[in-house]
Image (cartoon, rainbow, N blue to C red):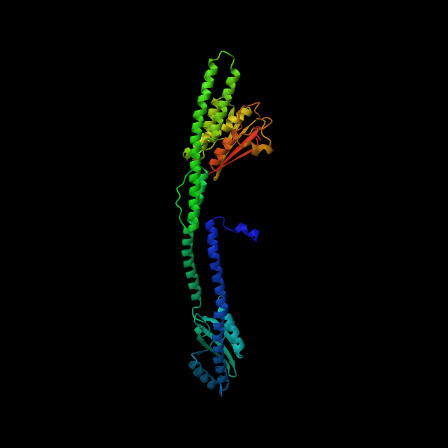
Amino acid sequence: MIFPWLKRYMPRSLYGRAALILILPVAVLQIVVAVAFAQRHFDGVTEQMSRVLAIELRYLTSQINNAAGAETAVVEAGRIARALDMELTADPVDGVIKGWSDISGITIARVLNDEVPKLSGINLALEPSLVGVTLSTDHGLFTVTLDRRRLSPKNPHQLFVWMVAIGAVMLVISYMFLRNQLRPVKRLAVAAAAFGRGQVVSLTPTGATEMRAAGTAFLDMRARIERQAQQRRLMLSGISHDLRTPLTRMRLGLSLMDEDTSELEGDVDAMQQMLDAFLNFARDEGTEETEIADLGQLITDAIQQSQRAGFDVTAIGAISTASMPLRPMAIGRLLDNLISNGAKYGTRVGVSLAVSERSVCITIEDDGPGIEPEFYDTALRPFTRLEGGRNQNKVAGVGLGLAIANDIVRSHGGSLRLGVSDALGGLRVDVVLSRPAPN
């Protein structure tokens, strides 16, 4: 933006920015038209009408001055005033009297003071429709009253009222059309966000041609991804059948041999573990339907299951209730994976849950050797083993533990972060999941 400081005050939503783009030009146009009308038309017409009245007042003054005496002057003034549609009064005016909101009164007072040399005073606030003018003549002060409509246009505000009213009506109509054009964008964003969390939301392309094209492209992309996932499931089903059967025959054959086959049986078990790890990583989580589940209860169940398995796992703080759309089986696998990894590389594991209005954070930490910060990104890659404390000489595996967990978290639209545990000194894993905004 040209003015970076202005960005803080701009609307964040598409509706707000579109409304600003729609309203701002209309408001600026109305202000410009109002100022131009007040300066060029309204002010000019008022000045012209005031000059016409100034001619009549000068003529009245000259006739009063030409009268033979004071009484004759009064009679002559009354006759001429009636002819000019004015009325003589006995209340003189000194100076200029007008209301604070009388914009045209400024022009009237200026023109009359300039054009009528013997003007003593003018009262523009006499009555809503009357004006009092006092003239200084050779026979004394003479005050006349006249209709205000002879000095300024009547009801000049009607133009502004009509302009604002019509502008408001057109803004409402324009906003309705604009909302209909922006609704497909919002629906597409909702469908894309839901698909990123593993949910399938019905979407019908509507709106302008470009929006229909974007919606159709998204539906085609989603269909291709779903077909690819289906093909992967079929492929994995074949791999499971083709590889498990030979491994079973190998294990049975080794059990029937008289020689010591413990090393070969260990290799078969390692192959079985690697096959299971690969299938867990490549398993399609989209087959499980999303439902409203209590994340706190899932964490409590995972802790209890790990304790029954002999792991030293405890809850750090209270595990509060957090109901949100989840795939319970996938979250259960995520928790079991992270807790078991922490128990393998350490002796103690702590689990905590922090709940806010828009997100939840599951923290799993252990007292193991941890991971160096420069290897955080590498540890999340599949089939990656790290040197140092977490290596294959200590714990068997194929480097899929954190990769599986990261895949499940991303399928829920969340993020997985690694760090150092302040409480236990080992690895800290933060799983952040967003919560839907309240309706």
